[in-house]
Length: 477
Ligand SMILES: Cc1cc2nc3c(=O)[nH]c(=O)nc-3n(C[C@H](O)[C@H](O)[C@H](O)COP(=O)(O)OP(=O)(O)OC[C@H]3O[C@@H](n4cnc5c(N)ncnc54)[C@H](O)[C@@H]3O)c2cc1C
Image (cartoon, rainbow, N blue to C red; front, side):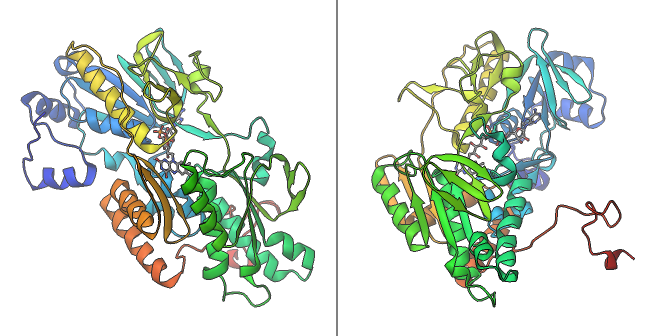
């Protein structure tokens, strides 16, 4: 497809949204009609209606690919109004960044796509035989459907642990984790009871994958550097940060030499790594392992992933993690016009014989592939197989170290962190976000400070029952 930048407005929009403008006569007509809200029978009847569920990495990549394509009309449905850059969520949880720096309104990202409509609603069910998507308040028929609802963390059947050990998937969870971590230091500072103080200065992170490692490194660094001089009654650097992993080593998906380096970096930040330690129970008092109980004021969950339940609820075949089993073109075996991409999709890579990991590049490549397949179908061209191009993986430890594996190359330390930084800035959605994130990091790199160290209450009401009313009554008079 040739991309023509028509004027300064189009050039600006291309920069902001990454959506090219195809200036065929037909798409111009469609855009004109849809802008006026008067789509004519001639354009909508010829256009295939594609519904995308989910504006995450997969859904958004597909939507951008289908943007301004004359042969399709697209409806993207997401229960949230924003696309979230989850790889930097731990930075919000650790007070390094503010939520708005890693999220962007889906509507604004796709504002240049004239054949696309965004609906902010939750998809409740699907009637794949009749080609219907059911949202909270609407039924939409589709010609093609892309399910890209992602995944959430799972507790291996122990969902009752969640209140004591939140996971990290949404902005709400990130700000709750931030509140708990910062509150723990405040409680420890306020108490005179040495046992309580020790408990609140103990942080346990369950799960030694990249997210667990990033959280543990950030808490270790925060306690040893950022908060070191801010308290009078406690020494934050005496905080115990324990990373608990059931397997014999952390970062199982990385080469062992890199995982060992990451362990050294974590230990230098004061993190204790307890491998081969399976969690038996979590409650308000801490974590119980097979042979030990750790009293802890803060427990964070970074183990286990469970796909969105929508696939299962729709009766599609799913694997043990709830991911929908797909064919090599990412379509559901029983419904060739229904595709699944990203974390919700169970796809065995023919090159390795292994399930593709739940990572942003996998989701984005699959989203683009599905969009191309739909365009090919409409053009009556044959379908091809999805082939994943693996560009490597990374994890960061603390403020300035990382490990990176790109093909046969392995890096660890500051250089790997620079690569991590460039990649994350490059893929972060929105120029404004990139700009502010770079600024925040440069500032915290040189000062060790964390700009978003705010403890915000979950309760906002001035008036209510005594339990609900958390805001200082003096302020509400
Ligand atoms: C803390 C954390 C750190 C990570 N770090 C990295 C990293 O460093 N590198 C990396 O490559 N990957 C990382 N990942 C994984 C990566 O973010 C995911 O693989 C990626 O987000 C998957 O994209 P997706 O489009 O499948 O799902 P998502 O990005 O999760 O998007 C799913 C979307 O669907 C919407 N949705 C769900 N159900 C419904 C419904 N019923 N109705 C309407 N909308 C719905 C959601 O609101 C969401 O917007 C990380 C993930 C987390 C949680």
